[in-house]
Amino acid sequence: MNPQLEPTSAIAKTSLGATGDWFDHPVHAYPHQTDYAGIVWHGTYISWMEEARVKCLQSIGIGFADLVAMGCDLPVVDLSVRYHRPVQMGMDAVVRTRMAKMDGIRINWDYQIQSLDGIELYVTAQVTLVAVDREKGKILRQLPPAVREVLMKLQAE
Image (tube, rainbow, N blue to C red; front, top):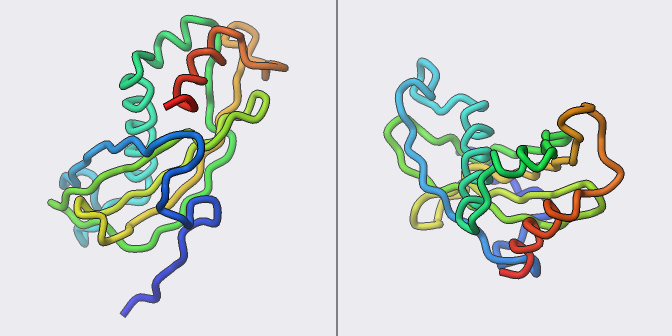
């Protein structure tokens, strides 16, 4: 029997954060996302988290391409992942995400990947993005006002 790992500290509580509700993005484990044992490859979870973040933004009317068009790119600068249980080929799961907080140019997101019924916890993670000037390739001193305004919609939800 596998020992049960605790979720990453920032998202140990499954209750909703002060910054808004969780956004749920369903996923399915396809054969090409697994290893020879039929277990989802660790990098697939990161792809699923990216999909969920982009879909979360789309749900409030923000296309990621629109953010980039504003001259701001948001690369990942920090990633913390805790794998609790494997997802196996053919299984369905849900990736839950929320913007945890904006701290200057840092935008922190929380993640939980779990069974559709919420009983099994497969992965918990945290991702930090920073604002980068797309043309200059340099970290911005502050979020562009239009980008900040758009992201504030997630905190108001």
